[in-house]
Length: 377
Image (cartoon, rainbow, N blue to C red):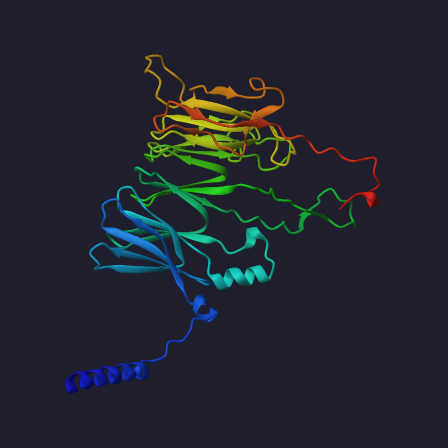
């Protein structure tokens, strides 16, 4: 009996000591929540040797961590996000956010969107650790199943208006000023620059005034389109770098090949290529980007090489294979058009092409019967 009483006394004493000796836990506050970090966007290379993930705070700059699967190597990239491994497991590509402090400072100053701090692109060679960095990046694209080329869209900053310049007037009479002042207005472009980077050898090509980009899954075919630089009815001359149209980058010759530069089209959208790069579809409109109502047509081109012919043909960079009109206002119901907000897409086997149609938006009618001071604002 005494033994049981002694054990009970010792148990009560130990419990009391544990309760009094243990530190009191502090309840969580909102300040604790602000210090929490999130792990997201986990990626693994196809060969299973590398993994990467983002660590992002509630506010501020995050970090992207790259680790080898055996745990022997760890590399941190401040502000890294949207990472992708290449299909050959040789490179890791990521975007680097502009510093949070710089972006917040620009917002407080009410900086225009095109003047805000921009992201950068970083390409890392996983074997050597060598990096390649490009600034002012909006997006990048690479072949999901292969290829060494990366298509990088870089924003173009609007050029500042030219200052007043003086030109000597040789026809002015004696005693009068011999200089005349004129203002040079630069052409404003709403499109971007496209840089094609070859990760294998580091070479690159840049094309200006690009509005859309498409790349096949195998990375062997790259297409892009250019829109008219302005709403002016005057079009660029054939062969000019600002000529609206659809173009292909020939990986073998590394030259630009024209697919379509029809003089009546001013806007191109919805470039789509099948998985093996053998078929291309796109939308085009004769209406300018600023038009209230726009009608688009759908076009298709078979990119498979035509049978060889013994007849001699003149050398030209223009693609001679014709393309087809699949849908336009002549083939669709009255006041209907191909939907510009739904890009066409090919099925996985390349046997079908899916696209959308919709009624053409009606132009807003101007109210000329109600005085301005009586209109609802």
